[in-house]
Image (tube, rainbow, N blue to C red; front, side, top):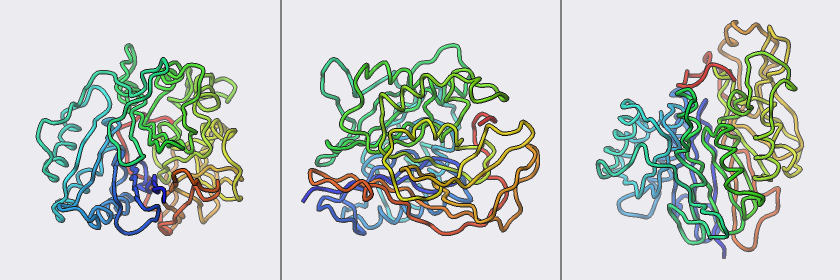
Length: 391
């Protein structure tokens, strides 16, 4: 029987935390045969469920000691590594270990390095064994040469599409985001692409690297780069303007020619101060996605009257999801500086799960699932992150 790989975009508030679970016999169960964690960030308020889920899956491993096989941190922003401290404390209680660690992104600040090192100490990972500012790297050499990988289990390989891209003459936040490690989970039949906070510069480098051919095998699923941020998706962002004022050429090429994802997802934080994800960015990726049963997702609608903003529940019949599925109350337009809705405004939230099987394959509708975590009451704006203040 072919193996089953679950790529879980975990609900964590404003941030990215993805757990990859591999089951050798093709059946999901309590104990996975391999676990890989790609980023571990989010809000302290909303990220507890993600941390608990990871700990639970590690605790149920049949290995001695309990093991998290692979950890990849795409770059240094808090919403990609800020839950590592909490996770490290939890894993220490079960005496867990980590197999290997890969760090992406340039210009790591001492405090962010300390966050990672505290986690590594908790799981007894060798000190000094990670490189926080490695040179630009890729497992895709091009020229017809087969790609390499940073880790593998059975038929599943973990690859770096690009990492530590050097971007001169840009602001510090673009250095951080644009140098993110873009991770590919590849089972030989389908891939899932996890791009961290990739910017249009990162996407241009990928478009160039892959040339005229799409990433193969088929891209089953793609997490929207940088949480669906508008500022780093377009080439001439401005805080004001119409959609047609912006240049979308690079991200459209990335979406419709290079990636061609069958399904897309985005991590979302309720009314977060960065206004992620942006509906209009998500829409760039919709054209190649599978049709799906009518459902909803929550996103920030950017192109409205200049004095208003709006979070909305959007109905769609394509394979598009965010980790917030629905607002239980109708959101009225409000001024940009107005406070977030009061406590008691509820969200239906959950994990987005992509399923990769071997040669037998799965039907399109079986390859993605939204698993609700419950309904969360609003506690005010989601936690601030080390990020640009614009969408």
